[in-house]
Length: 116
Image 1 (cartoon, rainbow, N blue to C red):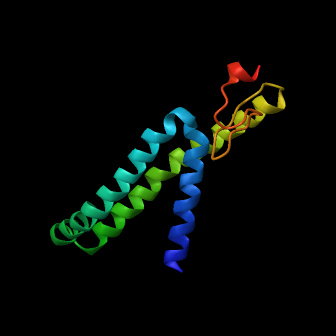
Image 2 (tube, rainbow, N blue to C red):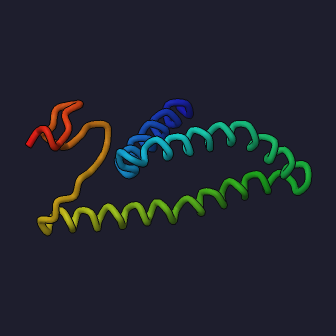
């Protein structure tokens, strides 16, 4: 169950990243995310062991709880920006979203200048 939930959260997280980073920013954003995951796998067990050795059992869990609390603020801000984007869309302002599929009528590889 833990592996399934991790796979779901990872997939949804990357989909949110693709939707919010835009076409120009998806490369650096994906690079940062994958680098952060690799560094976390490398160093977090060592940091947890050091915390356990120096402070004790609860320090490891309290640091995890602190990270969850720290993660809460960006999630709230992400929801607020989504609400603002929906308000712009409702007001008739064209907002272009990015993701795995382009939202324009151009064919793949065709430039907008030659399509006009």
